[in-house]
Image (cartoon, rainbow, N blue to C red; front, side, top):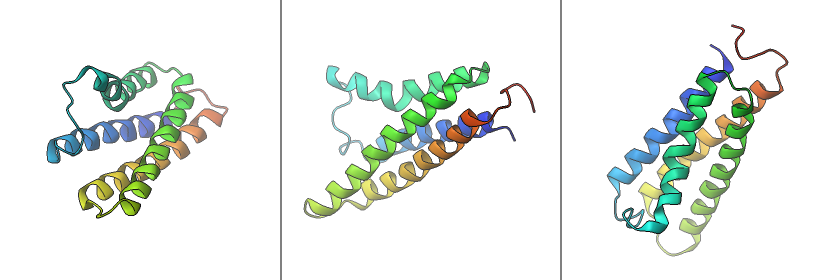
Length: 125
């Protein structure tokens, strides 16, 4: 399996986990209808889907963009876990979702970095 296909699978998995988290705990994520949350929705759903499209079309830069996206996502996951553990009673659903997305973001960093630093082009099998 090509690295770009693996990165696309991880990006799609991140979108699915974000959708399932919003569906399972709608009160935990805040009011998604407010205008200030459009940027957050774009980060959770738009950026990964744009990166999947760019990778599907063979754009190598999208691998490094995926690494940057994974780095920001992992930092947010770690800060969420620390906040949940230090600010009163922890919500198990939030900790579980942050753990899953944290692992996916770490995998995204590893796979995307490996694919970007590989000297072969994306189009080769």
